[in-house]
Image (cartoon, rainbow, N blue to C red; front, side, top):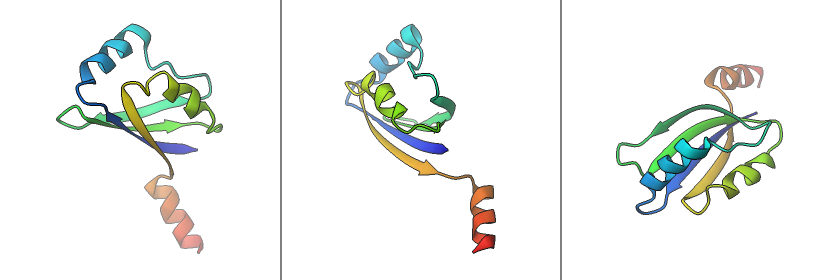
Length: 89
């Protein structure tokens, strides 16, 4: 299943976030897969697409980062999947 992860950086935390990322990588547990991400121009919000069959893995991952950012995790589907689903309804 795909998830849109919205990471809201805590005030002034962008430099620390990128330093930790360089030193430790994404620190995702096995079974949680990074797909792609986009950062706003002010380095305050990151929008990520991630994939997993075990939603509980998100808690393991967010614990490594929650001192620097807040998370919103939303299950999503691709536009192609949505179109197929809508056609079946």
